[in-house]
Image (cartoon, rainbow, N blue to C red; front, side, top):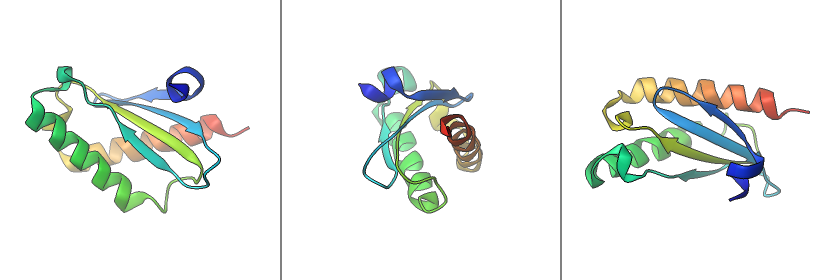
Length: 100
């Protein structure tokens, strides 16, 4: 996948975030939660929480990026406020790194 091969990556204790510029003009989100993250209930919970955070902050995010989030094991037990803070901080790091 192009975002893994050509994009930038930043990590946190809860997830790894990948990003690559796109030509669409708005941010798109992909989430890959493997069985290492936990059972189906835990995987679905973390995906739901990450999608909600993305939805609430979509206007604040830089336009034209494809994002892929890979949650780490135990991420489903992290409080939502902490996940939100980590995601926004890592996103800011990525946008700084992707600027020419």
